[in-house]
Amino acid sequence: MSESLSVTYCETQIHPTAIIDPTVKIGVGVQIGPYCVVSGDVILGDGVQLISHVVISGKTTIGEQTKIYPFASLGHIPQDLKHKGEPSILNIGKRSTIREYVTMQGGTEGGGLITTIGDECFFMASSHVAHDCTLGNHIIMANCATLAGHVQVADYAIIGGLSAIHQFVRIGHHAIIGGMSAVEDDVIPYGSVKGDRANLYGINIIGLKRRGFSREEVESLRAAYKDIFEGSLTLKERTEQAAQKYQQEIYVKEVIDFILSPEAKRPICVPKDDATN
Image (tube, rainbow, N blue to C red):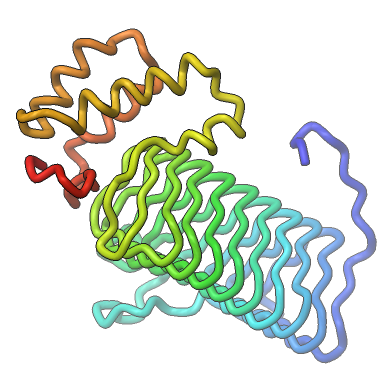
């Protein structure tokens, strides 16, 4: 739904079996179903729906019109032995869907004490977002997909079912992770990754076409992919050469900047036969 559209909310409704702390701030038109438990410094934005049996705790903010299904657990202390009870924040954006048994936790001192989820994301059943993760907008995590701590996922990324993402990994925007993948390294924007100890398998061409990228833009990314990930030079050397060749290509520049980023803590995920990373 567009931000510009006017939204009319129904009356706030709280089922009599729900347990809500007086510290919880509840917006207009919030629907809290049977047996939900909401405690701590929780903020429920306008139009939020808790279907039933949802548990929310800690310093957690749920953006407007987000819908949360039974047995989701949000905002409890991080699953990190280094956490010693310090304040922990979980911010979830607007118009997201959080299905059954999803778990999301706040941050730790080592990651800024905050976990952030963007707008209009879709978390399928049993997916997990660990402490200190940062997720953008329009992200899809399929059933049982899991993020370890400090993972960054950019806009429009898709993470397939039963996949596991290593701590500190970055997933670039418009990337796709195939189901049952174990991702230990950073995934470039627009990349397609799959496999046990996952490897890069090219550009997410189908996804780019669905999102309106032109044929010329897709072909430019494909050509740059070959220049960056094929050849006898090191990955860094090939990427630096591509930076000179594709100076006018905005989307290619995003890939190059991602690879060369000084903030990276993990290697770049490369094709299976590329040993020069």
